[in-house]
Length: 533
Image (cartoon, rainbow, N blue to C red; front, top):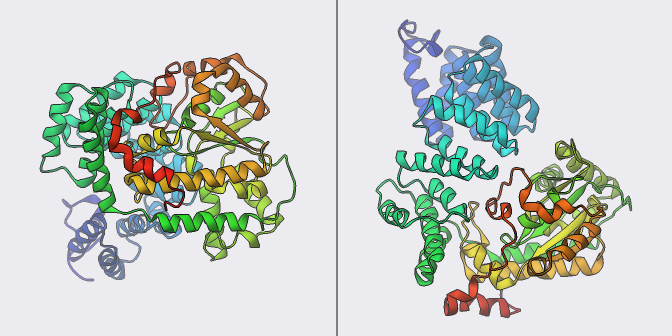
C-alpha cells in the first residue's frame, strides 16, 4: 500500500499509516461494528500487507477475533499491539476481553483495572470493568465501576441499565429505580430499563408508568426486544392492579413476539432428555462419595422457589450462595468439544477417571465461592438435566429439586421474560411439555438416590418453614442455624428475578394462576395430558 504519510492532525492511533490506508481502517471498523467479518478481515489484511505490524490495525484484528469468539487469535494480535503500546488503554481493555474469553479471568481483570488506572477518564474502560465484575458476581465493586462510567459519560445508556441491575442484586432498590429511570430519560423505549423496573416485584409500577409504557410501545426507535420487555412490564403492571384480562393479553403478545424470533422445539428437547436418561445407566463412577461434597445444586423450573431455597441456605455460616453458575454446563461443553462427539452421545464412553477429572474441573472453576465458607450453592435451574451424570462426576454433591405447583410454575414462567431464545416459556404447550420432562426425570433420579436428590416443595416451605428448613439443612448435612429462619436479613448479591422478593419475610399469598380463569385452560389441559410433547 502506497501513499503519503498520515497527516499530523489525524488520529494519533493511525500514525505511521499512509494516507491511502485510512479509508480502509475506517471501513474495517464499520464492518466490525456492523457484523461483516469477511469484509473487515479483507480490509485489515490489505492494510497490514502494506504496513506490517501496525499496532492499530493489529488491535482492530484483535477486536474482530473477539467478536468471532476466536479468543486465542485475538490475544495474539493484541499482544503485538501492547508490545508497541504498553499503555494503550483501549488495547488493554480489548486484551482483557480476549483473556476473559480464554477463562484467564484474573489476568483479564488485571488488564481492565490497569486500563482504568492509566486513564481514569476512560468511561468505556470503567463500563467494561463493571460489566464483567457484575457477570462474575463481584457486585459491590461492579457498582463502583459503573457509577464512574455513568459519571464520566452520563449519556451511556447501557451503563445506567447495568448499574440498576447491580443495585437490585444488592437490594438497593431506591438507587436502582433512579438508575433505570435515568436510562429512560435517555431512551423512553429502552426495554431493558422497563424490564429492570418491573422485575423489582415488590415495587409496583404506577399508572403514570402505564401511560408512558403505552407511548413507548409506539416509539419509532423501539426494537422487537424492547417491545417484548415492555409488554411483559405492562402485563405485570396490569396484574398488580387486578386487571387480569389486560395482563394476560400483554404477556401473551410478548411471548408470541418472542416465539416469532425463535421457536422452541419441544420434540427435539424431549429426545435430548430421553438420550441423557438412556446414557445414565452406562456411567462409570469411582465411588468417591467425598468428591463434590462442597457443592449443593439447586435445580428445577424457573420461578419455582429456587432463589428462596438458596437464600435460606446462604444464611448458614457454612454456605456461600453463588446464584446461577454456568460452570457445570461449561465443563460439559468443553468435554463435548474435546471429544468431537455431540452431547450426550459420549457420556457412556467416559470412564471413572474422566468423570473424576471433570468433577475436579468444576470444583476448580468454582473454588472462589468457597474462599470464606466451605460449601457453596449452584442455583442454575436447568442443571436438572445433568442430575444423573452428577452421580459419576460429583458423587458427594447434594441436588435439591425445588418444586412448586405445576400450574403456578407454568404461569409464573409464562409471564417472566427470559432473554435466551428460543425458550420453552413462550408457548403454553411447550412450557407444559418441558415441565413434564423435568418432573419425570427428577422423579426417576430421586427414586434411584433419595438421599442425594432431595425434593423441596415450595408450598410446604410456606406452610411450615421451621420444620422444612430444619429438614433441608439435615438433608444437606448441615447443623441447624437459627439465621436460616431469618433468611430475608441476609446481605448478599442475589442475581435473579427474585432479588426483591427474597429480601422480605415469607409471603404465603403467592398463588396467582386461578385469577386468570379460562385463559389458562390451554396450560391446564397440556399439563394433564401425559402425551403432550
